[in-house]
Image (cartoon, rainbow, N blue to C red; front, side):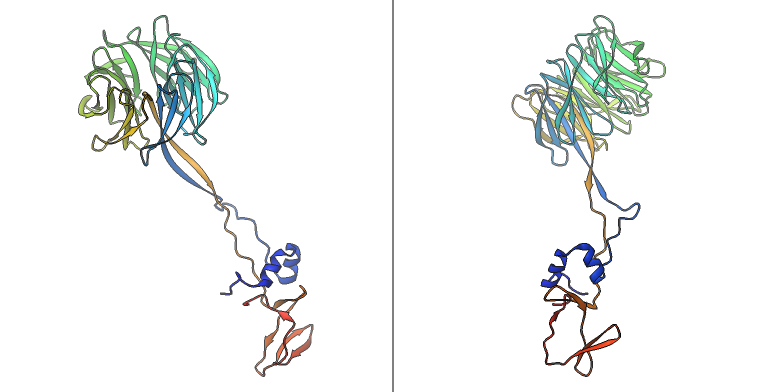
Length: 408
């Protein structure tokens, strides 16, 4: 193969006009990329977003290394957090400033702030990503945010004294389930009309604080801090079909993507109860940090992240073994509360593959820059070449004026 990387002649030609070069030395013009040619690559990674109420920031945790890579300032006393299904944005409720911060996962900066009700607590995003539902504890209502414009689309009243906290949306996006701590009920919101379509009474003294729905949408699990139980609701009938004893003061819960397990943060007993959804019974108890509040499970179901309010850290659970494999410090005084894990797809630009220019080897560049046909050596010792039917010759001892651009 001819080496094109060296030689003064090659460099000189590069500096010449591209059009002249194509005509003079026969360079093949670069063709445009063919249809379907790969021009970009995709990389998927996961980040956990941990709400630090003590510092009014959100800590970004790299789930590969389980380390905090940066913190993002948000509103006052943030509490709840949710990620859009496409992983591009994070919605954070700010309990102290009565608004919601919208974070871009590409830049990890706040791109919008949406005023909502009084003391917003939790947030959930619809499966199609078009709405974010925010519970407003002191306003006894729910705000529906249009995620395309980040403006309030509707406000749904739950009745006086509802004091809503947790919220979850069915996989088909038709209903939102809200835990009403003040009335010991679960309100069911029709997302098409943004009205309450049903109210489900939880057992006396249960005090529902959080809710999660199975991936198939058939059941809603509700954490009740008053009775240290989790109630399983049949979403087709609105009937409680199981009441499961767990640890002391269950406050946050999350369900694995395959629907087989519910992970429950037990706030006082400092552990996580694991519920088998087939048997509706606790099959494991995992000690974590001090005062656990919330749980988020990675999209692949392999790990659960648990925020520990009093110990200022996050416990990372391997869900295959149900053991803590790492503890991520969020810093002194951070007071981690909510947590959500985002699967982020990044596009990495890639230039299309192009062939190297084809170069004719029967031309040379003279010292004056002129392009002429190249010489070659005859067997009898004379250097010759033919131009337009006439023969030019140069004896072996004579030095040619031309300088080849190939193989110098």
